[in-house]
Length: 266
Ligand code: NAD
Image 1 (cartoon, rainbow, N blue to C red):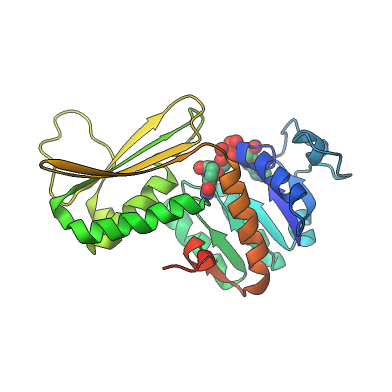
Image 2 (cartoon, rainbow, N blue to C red; image 1 turned 90 degrees about the vertical axis):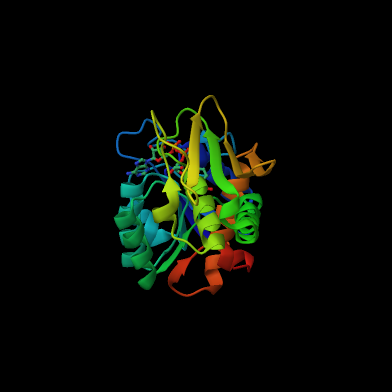
């Protein structure tokens, strides 16, 4: 399968290049970065410490979409939405790892699924997706008697908060309780907040150092506390999942897909 990477010099972009280069079923057909980025013109293989590929990194996303069967995008919401338009125009599959979409951006991204294959995951790790399923299940069993709090920590460069994964965990807890996260979410606490409102789903965000991604879903009651935790220690868990999604697109039609469909659980 012919795969292109946009945002190829980013933390995830570099992991994705490596993953595509070593995968026996993938061929890297291009790598794109933002205009003005110092890596433009470099060989993407050399950039990530592999053998030369005879490709050069460009800022020409439309040529990449024309050449690829699937493009993988871990960039920023406005950039991804432009790429989704290009994917729709060229009928190319788009795999999105970008987080931080607002409601309008998220709706626009999903709508492109009517034109081409769009796959989005706030987190491509199998372990985190298991955590999502467990969180929903535990929330449905415990109900509102146990206060749900979601803690996450990421590296100091991360620009959105709470993380896309923390919000997905919040949606899983809300779904388990049969409520809407937008009504229940308590995303920030500061100052004299008053006592906790029963049924709130709280979020706490930590940023620092090189932490790849830690998430805990906590259910706290009088006398006991249950904590479900996932800690990522290597970004390859995300890049291998994203490449798997790109390969999976081969046998799918247009539509908006996620990890639940690919892994076969709801
Ligand atoms: P990063 O800042 O290291 O990389 C983003 C890259 O996109 C940069 O190299 C930047 O130059 C590039 N870019 C910006 N504008 C561009 C344009 N117009 N064309 C092409 N490239 C452009 O960030 P990162 O840590 O790699 O994370 C990127 C995104 O992926 C974030 O939203 C992050 O939250 C998300 N992420 C998702 C998962 C997941 O499993 N879904 C895992 C890790 C990170």
